[in-house]
Amino acid sequence: MSEHRVLRLNWIEGRPTLSGGIKSNRLIAEAMQRRGHEVTTSFLPPQLSWPRPWRVRRFARRLARQFKPNPFPHHLEHSTVCLNQMPTRTLNPDLVPDADVTFASWWQVWDLVSGWPASKGLKVHYVRGHEVHAGPREEVDRVYSIHGPRVVISSWLRSVMQGYGHSEIVRVPNGVDWKQFDSSPRSRQPRPTIGMLMALEPVKDTPTGIEAIRILLKKYPDLRVLAYGKRPVQPSWDLPACVQYHQSPAQTLIPKLYQSTDCWIMSSRSEGFGMPGIEAAASHCPIVSTRCGGPDDFVREGVNGFLADVGDAQGIADAVSKILELEDDSWKAMSDASYSIAKEFDWDESAAKLEAQLYRWLDERSAPEGTA
Figure 1 (cartoon, rainbow, N blue to C red):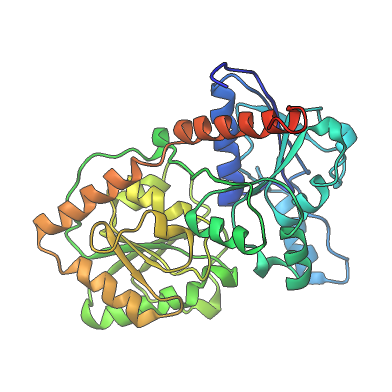
Figure 2: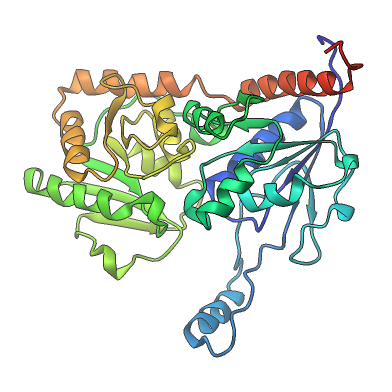
């Protein structure tokens, strides 16, 4: 078991986007390549499908997007692993290399990959979230119940997968891209400043985060909020004037946003891990998150932040107030603690753990019956 063996590894994606799941798969795949394995990421074309012409507004938006310099940016664009884009919007196993292990994350992709030929190797569900919000509940539950080994990225997801009756589960936490997010000790901002990611998906519960901001404004009239997201500001958000929103910011800007805040908010209803939170922590930022799953692994109550109940805008605001009202030395101690906790999450260390588990699973399946 101690002998290093080169493995042929496939990561299978749907349509690549700027989502945290795509980014995380890219980073663990690259870390496995650094360990000497042969890695290929296969994916669907990044273009959105064309809506029907009579859906005039959608068709017009799709047409306008087509003429942008980079109409469909995604996290795989500059990956260092071998990229294999499908010629059509179908994941065809005949066009995917044979492998020792093939990973799938998104529930619909796992539904396909779990039935692929034996030549694609051991099929592993790389669980990055409990995606019951993303399709009919009965159908999603059926897919999560498909037999096969599981890699999960958080302690919460391990308990969720155990609830589906799975026992072959290993936790391989997400890491921090330290080339992008490493930071130096810093002081708080002269003006109270908080930040959050804003998204349309109901699971991110942006409205609760915005309501917390409105509550905080009553106490801190000079509050500044730095926010970013993929989509334009939605009229329904009714953003307060203190919010500076950055749509699809350059990757080089995101660390600067984190480093310019005194506290980062995560108001989600469910997170498999919570990449903005750990990235903010790596940027010496205290965190306030809802108890939405994954962030429980890196938000430690009173040490580097606080947890509030899902949907509780007042609870989020109260937790943020605790951080904003800290003395400078106490705030800096919490800021430094966030960075120290973030240092526990490293892609190369996660890759070493994943590699060891893959060797175990493959050896168990190749051992003569009765000797495993």
